[in-house]
Image (cartoon, rainbow, N blue to C red; front, side):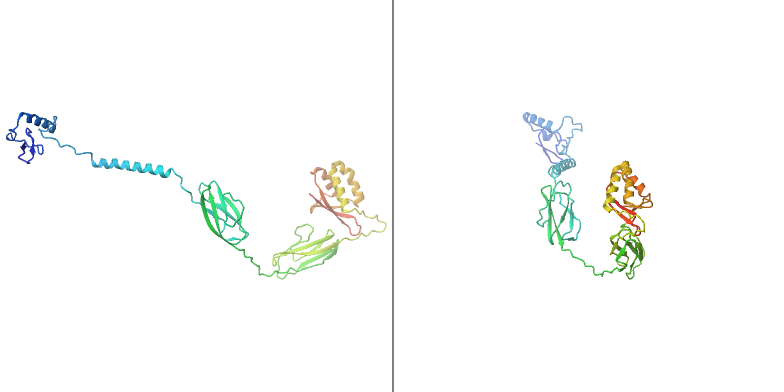
Length: 364
């Protein structure tokens, strides 16, 4: 064994340079060895000093292992790759239970009033509602309507997709009836309650403070006057309801008026006027309408002769609309109209002669 004089390292016999510091070993320290040990030493020396050593016989230092930074990078890549796989497989691959939500159309719910419930759950495909009031109605849509018949708190439950449940507590109150304490202002209509056909009458609204009025005399369904008073002559006998609306009462008041027909007064030597009933007039006019051109020729002139004094200046109203063409042109026009029905014919007669001066025809 040879000891390095510089660093004190003990070296095998036959080694020329210190294996620790590379200092040449003295020959004296290598003198005592035999052939067998020399062979072993030479073999060991070959292993200790690489053959391709070109640095003056100095041995190279051996690398201690893989660089630590590279090792950390490799470990980091493995860790994050494993983490991504776990999240993707165990979490993203599985469905998450939805939150069941639904809306109520109003916060103030009263007994007997309709309430709308609307589901807001994402990806919902089926619905089953239970309103908590023991109702037996089936509610299986996303939007449902319900009426609570009693007051109290109710737990409204919605099952979505057959397994996800949402519940909301609602409160139903008794409906409070609000009584109008403002007294009703009476409308005071002044005017005759009975008239003879053809007589003119004036009706007045005496409601205190009123400044605007709207009169309807009950014959046409239209507005007949806009002043405080109205003067009017009824065209048909029977019961009529005169009504007025004013800006103080803010409502319409009706007034019943009875109109009686007047018996015709025949002049000396005058031929009595035809007395055809309303039903006969309606029937003959319907025959003219159904007969077309031939029906007009066959029936109209007999109709005028037997039931009308004359067709000259005879006024015609159909469903309240004035027909300005006269009765002859009116009846001739039936053939050009689609089939229609005459519901009623009401004649207005001259109080003096009894002849018909106006026909009110109602059709459909």
